[in-house]
Image 1 (tube, rainbow, N blue to C red):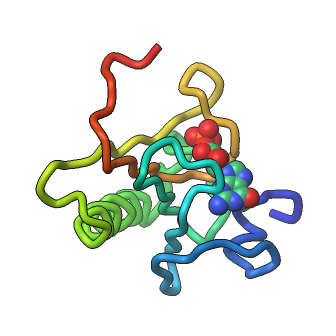
Image 2: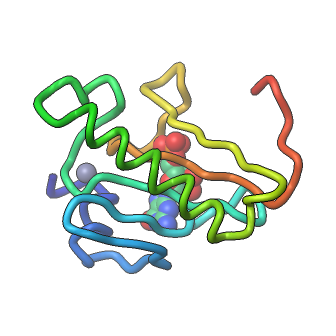
Length: 115
Ligand code: 5GP
Ligand code: ZN
């Protein structure tokens, strides 16, 4: 989608600190990290949020996003102490960028429950 910041990152029109990419998904460091490790895993295609993954291939795509998220979390040094895997959805979920993304946060203890 032309005015979506994550579509522009996926298209290489906005730079990012890339961790991984393939035909279907992309991972890059968050621009405003909330922990020593904080990166995002996104589909290349414009899907607005997790509640819009109901079409063909949606379950497989979600599986791939989460599987890659945990692989990269281990690569980023979170294998021993763990990490937080978060998908914010719409306004109550705190989503600010309307392109599906998995946050991975680690490198410090994280509080719970969220505020
Ligand atoms: P949300 O609040 O939608 O779950 O998370 C959006 C995330 O995207 C935020 O953590 C924010 O820092 C990150 N973000 C927003 N714009 C950019 C950008 O241009 N580049 C990168 N790398 N991260 C961004
Ligand atoms: Zn998009």
